Amino acid sequence: MGTPSSLPVAAATAAPTRDRAGGAGWRHVAAAVGAFVLLTGLGAVAPKWLTFLMTMAAGNGLVSLGIVCLMRGGVVPFGQGMVFAIGGYAAALFYNRLGFTDAIGLALAGGVAAVLIAAPFAPLLSRYRGIFFAMLTLALSMVTYGLLMKLDTFGGSDGFNLGRPTLLGMKLPDDKVGFILFLVTAGFAVVMAALARIYFDSTRGLVTLAARENELRVEYLGGSVRQAMAINFVLAAFCGGLGGALVVMALGHIEPNFSFWTTSGEFVFVAILAGWHSVVAVFVASTVLEVVRSFSSSYFPNTWQLALGIFLLLVIRFLPKGIGSLWHRERK
Amino acid sequence: MSAPLLEARGLNKRFGAVVAAADLQVDLAAGERVSLIGSNGAGKTTLVNMITGYLKPDSGHILLEGRDITRLAPRAITRLGVARSFQIPQLCGDLTVLDNMLVANACHDAGLSFWKPARRAETVDRAEALLERFRLQDQRHRRGAELAGGMRKLLDIAMALCAEPRILLLDEPTSGVAAEEKFPMMDTVMRGLADDGAMTVLFVEHDMDIVERYASRVIAFYAGRIIADGAPGVALASEDVRRYVTGELLVE
Image (cartoon, rainbow over the protein chains, first blue to last red):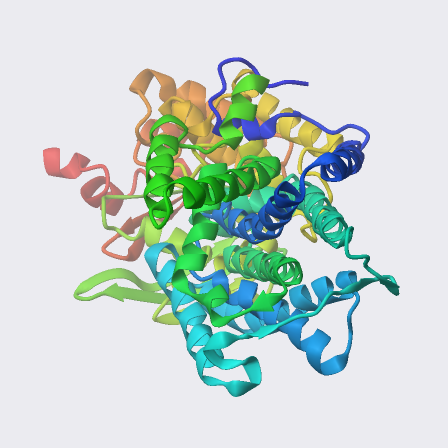
């Protein structure tokens, strides 16, 4: 059932008025499977540089998906580089120190490590909004950056390398390693995107959206805004850690810059570019960023941030609710 | 006589030199329709705010069925069955009317879910039935911010009802509503509440015609004190009310 034509974009979040048979969840699963099949086909025929670019886009997109999760509650973190780095370092340390090499296991270890380190801060951060929330997350990421720079255990300012991971006990062949890592990353991306969509459409997801609008009302209806914010922070940490681990496996290297504020800024850029209406838009926006970065670096060396800035200006001017609002406009 | 549903015992509240509540003693029984009257600053909304946990009294206790709720957070009090609407309706302006109701339903759910869709058939049906009772069914796909003032008030009250409260507090439900629309609006509100006969309704009101028609009991305030408490005919006729609330004796 569609929404009436008079609805503005925000109201169109209620795209299906009701889900009689609880079928929406299965539709999301089916869409995820379809997307994965499509990406597999694309990865199989794409040149290696494009496969790598899509791997990076999917990995980084996961971090931005976490930011979108928080944005739906009305807060924007400027320090997701912290969980991105924690995920990456956890995967690299598991590989180098423990000899654990499975790509799926390393990715999950990255997500879990980020949750374990971020969760204790969730109750504190859930009390803050706006610029205070943004600055606190930024502070945490910069403290992490400082520690990573100074501690030899983490390789200091040079970081350290990570060898080629395995997959379910199998060694990855030279000519297929990029494609297989792309499949693993894309697999996690579609699963997390589907789970995020199910969460956004759930009772908790709707209460998060309401908290963005009117915290007082949510509290007087019996909902806990702080709990919602804390949960979203932890979920965003998992997404960030997962993305960090996947990106590190694709790059084969990790360094403290993963936690630097400019890295966090790029994730926020993607989240703003995507908007908070659509999970697909997050990965589209992440791909756009990677393409702009890649081509700008080739054709306008050292000025790619200029291209990025102009691009963001155009998006804010013409698509203030992000790329995702295009989908919703069509649906209307 | 059965035990009161809600008891306020010796409530005191000051804002600097202003006394907003002075040793208030109030008992509310199930099913009562109680109107709080008084001039601005008399302490009506302060009492509502203390009952719902927005303000904590300087001293005194509030008991709900014998349980002390004085220091509980608003959401905990709501979950125990005390809901409220606001003088300025508190809606989620960018969400649709239906989504506002679904938010209220979701908050009332025993456990919020990560995967249970908010727009399930049973919750949508329940929300639409309540919207029907408040004559908002035709507005369900409009954004909260687009509604006219009276409709916003009605939606605010309908959202409070999603909590299935035993006590409903309405803070000036007709304020900001055109004079000729006040009675139709209160009719709609009372009709909307009719199915919940056991529910206690406490409403703050300045219009004495509304008070006389819809209240079964009136509590009048002046300078943080209760100056009259009884049936509308008795309370509104008292000398203190005529002097300090309605101003009739000043005119004479």
